[in-house]
Amino acid sequence: MSECGHDILDAYYNDELKMRIGRTWASIMRCQDGDDYDECGPAESRDHNNHPYTKILDKYLPNKSIKILELGAGDGSETRMFMDHGYENITGITVGGKNVERAKKLFNVELHYMDMHFMDFPNESFDAVVGFQTYEHTPAPLLLGLEINRVLKSGGIMLMDVPGGEWHMQKESNPHHLNVLEPWQGHAMLMRSGFSNVECIARSTGVNEGLEDSKYIFYGKKNGSGGHNNHFNDVVNGKFLTKE
Image 1: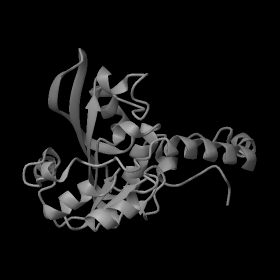
Image 2: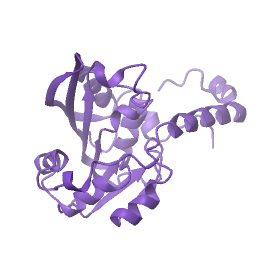
Image 3: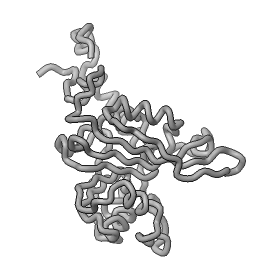
């Protein structure tokens, strides 16, 4: 990141503006919570041997002993399904106001209430970060990609199952999907976030009410220890505007 203008930026982003930014961000995230309905389906559809999500994990994360972070864990039903499938070293986070309580009560799963863009975990905490129908809910794909990169160990794996196509971004009917990216856009965004070997695999395609409806899997590996050799390096390394 260029050093030019840092003094001006430091002065501009005063405490009042930072508070306004924080409240605006918190309001956006509050609209994304999954109170009481964010689940992976009824019990009869959560057959962990045949569910498409567990099949994705089997293919891309065959080592079930690795340490996994699940973003957008909803009410814990997905996390429970993954644990039943053998992925017991998995941590889930959610922003649903009631989901932490529901996860414990319904599925005996300990979720963390946490914003996936600003997580409490230390650097290089996980071997893999996964998200199923989660990436499209971020208002800031680059920011999320950088945060995923931060909590991954060197060479760690990012695995996102995301929707694509016009049906998932209708302005009138789906206020929760904030960025339904075309494959090339998601690929470029994740490469900028510090991932290498990024692949975009079409999982299924179809037509929904005459509009394109696709599913994609984004897969990538953390590039080294986080040194991107580009102008996002300062963000990843925690060099924020406020001086010590």
